[in-house]
Length: 306
Image (tube, rainbow, N blue to C red; front, top):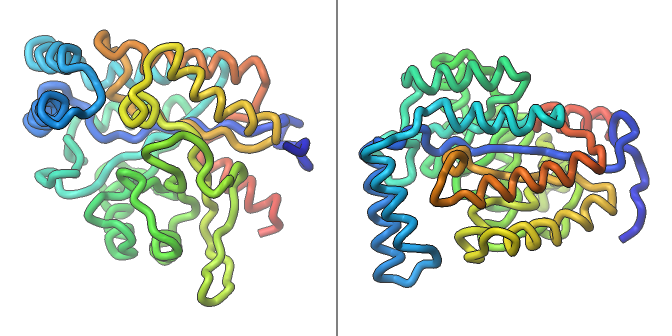
């Protein structure tokens, strides 16, 4: 790849965007337990990749020795703080009872404590766009208002649940809702930049040729892709992630990682957290500019003269 044609802030050679989608915060929660049971069914009957034994152990632990909701977030923030890194967390808003909805409500006292932890650490809280509010400007606006009222958060960034996306409807709806950036653009089943995009960019409406006023922050590597879609573990998962990351670093791009909070402090799935820790250690040694999604998007706007 060609060498970078510009420097990131602080004369850094590449950017780093760390993010976490908050789909669930409780272990002992009805919908989550039902989801774990269904996961075991798929492993057993449909041949889905994974370990039935580990999934059963995880289910039993969640029922009899559940984790504290804030614990995963304290762990994430401590890991990132070792290197002076800050990240973005996306709160899911959709009907609680729905199949793909959050496994918590915005009224949850635990969620409020989690948001306080995140903001006190200088990190960002954004919107995890609901599965059933997909590409719906009014739905996006309603979700932003809900987070403002319940959590006191002014949302500027979003990532859609399950990376649900269509072009250009997703970005047009987000723009209409007043959002500033989107972190959805990526793949669920394979790691790597979608359409080869390694830098933030402004999408263009193909019908009008107009620049859409949304900064897209392309995703590079997601935990679920490595461990579930590809069925990797340990060193193999780390190698696959670094194979994607290294060329982005060398080209001066934006390395963007997505790790879900509920796979930290998991004895049965220890390597999910271990791979994240290893990646951060390697990346820190290369001295990136690490910032929240909101900060990266606003810096990109200034860089582009907008």
